[in-house]
Structure formats: C-alpha cells, structure tokens
Length: 389
Image (tube, rainbow, N blue to C red; front, top):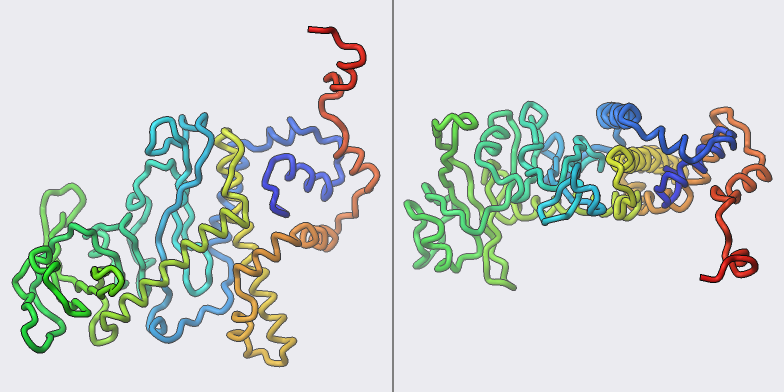
C-alpha cells in the first residue's frame, strides 16, 4: 500500500507498475477483492503478528519487572450508511467497523488485531489465557469485568483498570494510614466515604463478587487493590483497580503506569492518519476488510523498517550498543510519516531488488491517462453538436 492513497485505483496503478501488465482492466482488478483474497490477507497478517522479530524490547524503570506491557482497546471507523447490513453501528442507520487491538508497549506492534461491526462489545473480543503471564495489562472501562481481572491474576499476569464512577466496593483493609483525624475506611462502602475524603491518595483492599463461571449463577469473591490519586484541578479522585502489590508500586506509581495506555490511542491515530483508515470510500465488505488489513500490514512493515533504520543509525554513530539513543533520534511515528511520504521509492527499490524491470514509462503514462469511458460525450462536444434541452 505505497503512498497515502488507499484506493483500488491506486493499488491497480502500483500493480501495473510492478507487473508491467497494462492490459489489466479496472473491473478485473476490482474482482480480485474476494473472500478468498481477504482470507489470504488475514493469514499473512496473523503470520506477521506472530513471527515478526521485534526490535529493542527492554523495559526499564517502573516497567522493568514485566515481560511486557499490553494495552487493550478498540476504535471505530465510520463507514457509508449503505454498509449497515454488514457493519452496523450503535446509532440508527449508521455503519462502522470496530478495530480491537492489543499493543505491545515494548515493540509498538499489535499482538492482536480483530475487526467486528461497531456494535460489538469490546470485552467479548478479548480472550483470556497464558498470553498474559508475566505481563502488565492496561484496560479501559470497555473491559471493566471482574471475571476478566480474576482470569488475568490466575494466569500470573498483572492488570490496571480504571474504575466506574458508580462503583461501590466494600473496603476490607487500608494499605496506607494517615495521621490526624482522617476518616477510617475499613468496613466502609466506597461511595459512602468518597465525597468526604481529603487525602491525596487512597490505597485499600476491596472485595469483588462475580460468577465463578460465565452464566453459572455461582458467585465467588476476590480481593483486589483499590488505588486513588486526587486530581487537584478537578478535586476528584482518579480510581484504579489492580493486583500489583503496594510494596513494589505506590499509588502515584499506579497512576503513572496507567498513563502508558495513551500509547494505543496514538497507534489508532497512526493507523487512521498515516495508513488510510480515516476514510473508507466503499460499501463492499470484502474491500473494507482488505483495506483495514492492508493498513495493519503497512503498519507492521513500517515497524520493521524503523528497526532497520535504528540499527543503521547506531552503526553510523560508531556504536552497536547505541540502540536506545537511536530510538530517541528515530521515533516510530515520525518514521512512519517519512515512510508514507517516500513509500513509492521504497516500493521501487523493492521491485528492482526482486528482479522486476522498470516499466515502460510512455506506455504506463498512456495507460494511466486513458479514459475508461471514451464514448461518453464531453462538455465541449455537447456544446458543439448536442441537442438543446
């Protein structure tokens, strides 16, 4: 998907340049976007997500104890209204695709990439299992699920989640005490005391009740940690649930760790602004799916190229151990912008490296300029000899 134009016509022109087949007609090329082609693209994407070698993956500071930090979220791409039959949205007569992503903070790469209609609930698309072991999972309110928190904990992972405004937990233990006439929290319900608190931090252990198995009706109870940090501008608490121990992470550390969740918002912005998902001008479900997967593949390829550029930069700086400095000089999203601007050159060099010959420029320009509807009367012809209406 070279360049910023992600239309079928642009893909056709790039293909003709590489394959030198100027007899290929647009309807024929358009017909290639079939269920089988989408399945092939999906297989390529899944393989790339699983097997691409990441670049620098070391986490430091507050993050160094984790195998990785995984950020989970979803974002909606608005579609033409005529696509509602396949991609319904929450609003009446609206259409949209929802992208469900899990991003690795260490590599900047997606570890999970799914698409559904815009009405699908985020939580339903997040599997649980051993993939969370040793990792910190950052969750927004779309994944606010006590059963999910328990499954992450049971699989030896960690989590931080924002707390719903109306959450009313029973506080069973205070993990930090305050001097003076501070309000005791143990044995209280959160909502009964929250408005009266004036401390800078809340750090307590609370109980959660949920179904042991989905739909079983048999409940179980777990205790997790509730952390709150007072926002002085709004005079309200930012509340988080986590299974991280206070011995390793105090309340401000939890809030600071959660800030990393903004990375996935930047990734969605990159997919939309750099890789053409801000506007999809078709109602064909197979073309919609193909364009989304092509954007994801373009993102993955940009990360591979960024990794190679960082190695080249470190080598030119005279030190093979200069990877950290190179990552500062060459931020991923600035590199993806540069790749967007120069993608056509990247594709040209790739074409030559694979043994293709340069296309005949005269024939290519003639083919690109040829009117696909030569029998349609032009304005001047209508003026010169057309009938008066």
